[in-house]
Amino acid sequence: MTGSTTTSESTSTPTTTSTADAASAPSDPLLTGAYIGGSGSYAGNLELFEDWLGHPPALTMEFVEGLRSRDVVSRFLANRMTPIWEAGSVPVVTWLPSTGTTTETADDIAREVADGDHDALIERWAARLRDWTFGDGTQRRFYFRPGHEMNGNWFPWSADSSSTTNDYIEMWRRIHGIFTENGLDGTTMQWMWSPNADEIGGVRAEAYYPGDDYVDWVGLDGFNFGDSQSYSEWRTPEEIFGSMLERMRELTTKPVALPEVASSSFRGDDYTPSAKARWVRRLFSFADDNDVRMVNWFNTEKSGVDESDWAVFGGERGTDTHEIDGESYATYNAYRATVNSPSVIRGDADTAARLTDREFSGDL
Image 1 (spheres, rainbow, N blue to C red):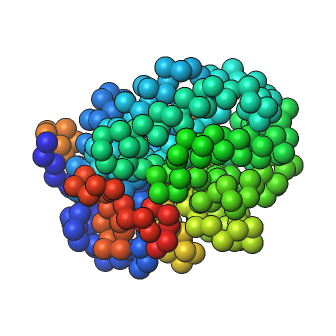
Image 2: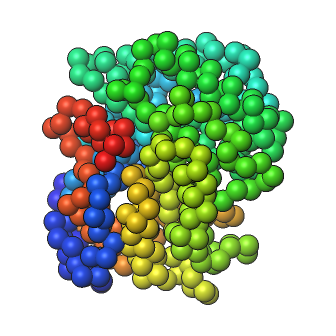
């Protein structure tokens, strides 16, 4: 697989940074990654993204409905976590405490988990993840963020449904206890508590916090919908994350991540890729200025209500193109140039642990 990039904004390669992108290059160490998305072969999609970047991302995000069935556990490890690891990245597992889709899941799912109703399946997850971590004679590792965006109104583990904040905390601590009893500790997994940057509903994010003994990272999810929705407007990273970030700094000293972040290109009355490129640069400047230690881009295209053209690689539009084996992909070089900055930590399939212990724990 060979690739080449054509850019309308600069002629930079993965090992150089153009003048336009220089302002966004982080000065402090930063972990970066992506949710890859896309159709077709999952391993193939990882390879395409890596070809464009010129190296594996340090992290790759995936989602799983954790309480759907026993079979989901084995399939997820084999078809998602293992390909991610073999590509040179550390998996970031967004574990939904759902028995199916969120609409199929009971509104009191947090209480069910807290009461032990799903212990058998959670025990299976813990045991299989332990085996995956140590199973091949080397020590694999992963990030784990269960029950994300709890301070919104779209997931059943939110206190806006039939659950309470206490149910959520007890759910988290019960899962944490089962995993710990199975030998999964901070050297092999990091627990990420992830509220949404925009609070929807009447319950503050802080009310869901499980406590410093149960959390390793705080992750804030946030999206710039631009003018793509009837209710939305173009917002800067500061406008999306600034207020919640201040609150999280008051709540805990844990390292902060942006595990799900992306921007639409729709500004004003039309799609404007150059505006999105500027937003990408501003995002990384914001992260650098505010000691954010991890940024994961939500790299997938979705249509309909509450979705937009999020991708920086392989989407419908971009500022640049990248050709791989005769096929052209729309891209945003602002992203690629920034994550190829010297201070950005890369994935590496030749490094046994992928990240150092300090990098893994956010001690950057």
